[in-house]
Image 1: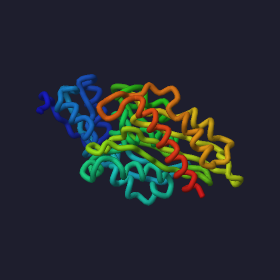
Image 2: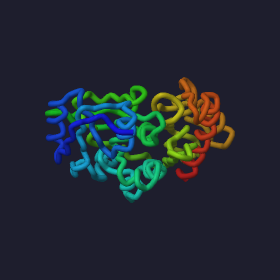
Image 3: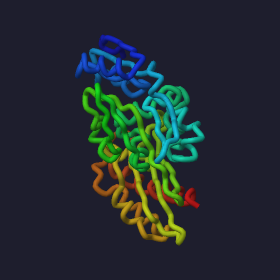
Image 4: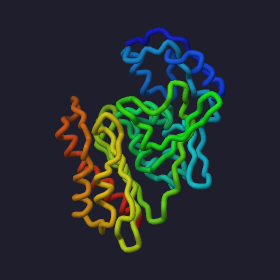
Length: 288
């Protein structure tokens, strides 16, 4: 499989990348790690006339602690995230999920910004961004804006990014005291993509009841989404096993389940409840 012909640019600054994006418009695609876009190009499902490689923009790769949370540059790799002590201590579910992406080669090249911008329905990090309540900063010529993860993932391979925008930074808010996190997925054995995956962020009060919960789902439907039914069912409960299982049974509410060679919609509906319960239990254990 060979891609169609294209012009290739490798800018060294965000300003230069944005200028190229303005110049070429809809003919251009941004390249981050490439493990999502390049396969689409090889199968001619994507045929950009212009490829703008962000890999040489060093200012987009960082993990910094700041007031109110962590700031992560969009070109920071999965390996850098999973190995970061800052991420492990402040947003452990992000480190956990990043360490489960594909294999070492892809984790060394793939980036958080590429994953979120691609909005693959089986990608790991969109669900994690939702569970953590991430805020995503975009850049365009002369402007910046912030989009909540809740509003970022629009549909299959579609986000709220405008054609002239680059995702530049991801901010993870500081987690409240008593919060535990976990990620659980049923993975395709060949690709390691999630057949279903669940990211759980649960805050437990001193009395053992759930104070708040955010549950991100991937692999089940056309885009990553929050399991709001499960979240609502958890709040105020003592988090024993029966309560967790009952709340997890709502994880698939409202999802138009994917049907493919890996799993039927019915099987995904079963898996999502099972893995939601596993992620919630692990998050509760990690909160103690």
